[in-house]
Length: 133
Image (cartoon, rainbow, N blue to C red; front, side, top):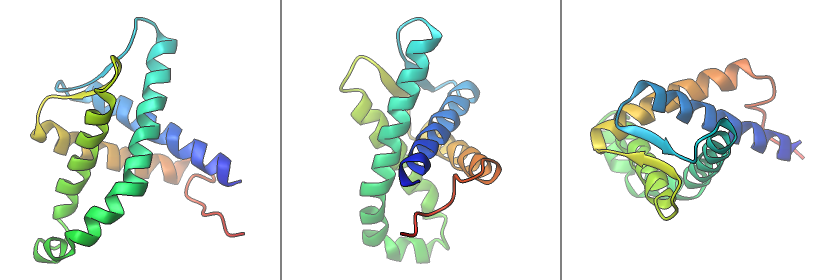
């Protein structure tokens, strides 16, 4: 069950990133020509984005906790944008992946991805369930 939930999260991340690339000009997924290649790259970027959010984001949140309090939680936008930029930076190590023009694009992209991920997680059954073994 945990594997299915993990795969759903990767697919939801990929779908949210795809939608953000369709809405924003400065956010692009670079892949070979063809739908299959694009889907595979989106799934890979979704996986990297999920891993970055699972591993790096809690550390950043712990270190920047006073800024969360000082800004009444608005610093979340900055952290989410930085996680998206880190995902882009990691994927730039290959010829494929996520390309982000600037920080402003990353903020808007992270906002779109957060909203779409939340909505898809609510709509898709089992996407938000935690494994309670």
